[in-house]
Length: 243
Image (cartoon, rainbow, N blue to C red; front, side):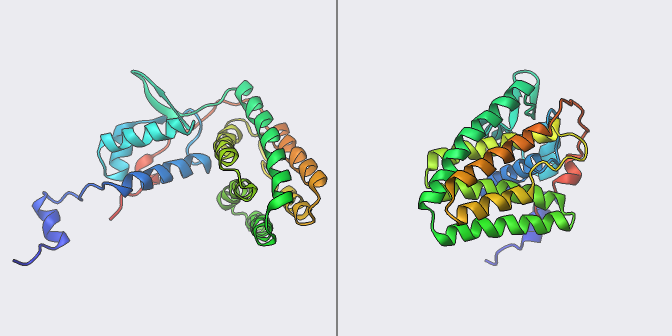
């Protein structure tokens, strides 16, 4: 017996696109995660299960599982009887995040200077230069992503998986803080400062590299101010169901 084509299967299902399973859960997680840290969805925005299920073409059960995973990553708040929303860090939490980052990234920088290969450091330097190109071309979304990639690459080069895990969470939470508190017109994560850090690491100058990193994080923190405004997001337009 000949196999039915995908079109015939879709017709037999009443014309509805087949639901996605397995790996699709991870893909949905990555898309929502990226939309949050790239500032496409503002802190405090409600994440309605029905809207997201429609946007992705999956069941609410799948969306509920993804939201739980995002809550574990501290990017989403789940409140009983109220549902999910993008996490909205308080000013005090923001200060604690920056304190933690200064402590952790100072240690990571020292470890990278002491033990990372020239090839690995070269990749870090390349990331900083690529971020500069994104800045110069006005690619804000690309710059935001590359900025986070720089810090995650630094953590990877340090060779400590536990510290790298902590930093990944802190970088994501910092993105929420910037989206919520950043002053108008501020450059939240300077490509020039990343380049300074990478060049000092290349020279194996731990003292200067740590100094540049601390200054860099202080610079970001100095450019945030309290704000609680956020806009409604059209999830159906933002997330296109897979064909």
